[in-house]
Length: 243
Image (cartoon, rainbow, N blue to C red):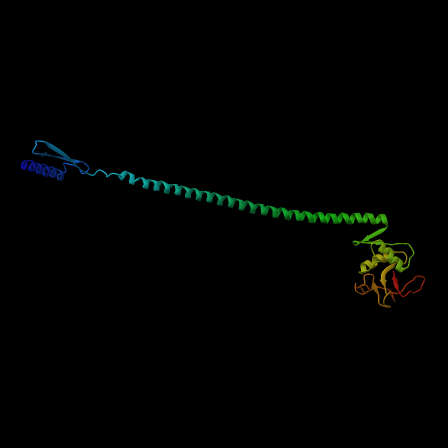
């Protein structure tokens, strides 16, 4: 028994020496057999295992790490996709804003052109209306002068009847506003006509039918003692004036 154990020690020391000298690699397994001889002549052997093999369950511990990496990669891809989508939306919105601004400028230019055309049409309408009024005036006996229409009636009426007659046609007895109009009237008549001047309310205070005073228009080109109260045949009424 002493010899057997002694040999066993020699074997282990011999193996350890070779391991130190590089004969065995760190990753290799070392097996040592020891034989024990018992009193009954039976022998038993035991196997010892040493080395760097991974312990049981080491492979299972690496699985959660891989799952976390996969999850992190998925999150990164989702974030990247979201950023790309936001970028696309921003570009689309910017393009839409530019398009709306361009359309607004186009509409502004179009509106300005339409306004100019409208002004031209209104001017043409006014000219056509004036021309039509002139033709109508000729047919009905009216005379146009400097944008105003005049009717020289030959019917014999007093001043009040003449004013009522004019009002029935939507107008009034003439109001002389300037020297040119007075000259036109004087050259257009061959007999006496009533004008829209009277002193019906206050004797000696002459006013036009629009209640403006006789000197408010700066027209004071009258003959001596005019304006006067004229009733025809040299009589005076103290109410109206004629030209």
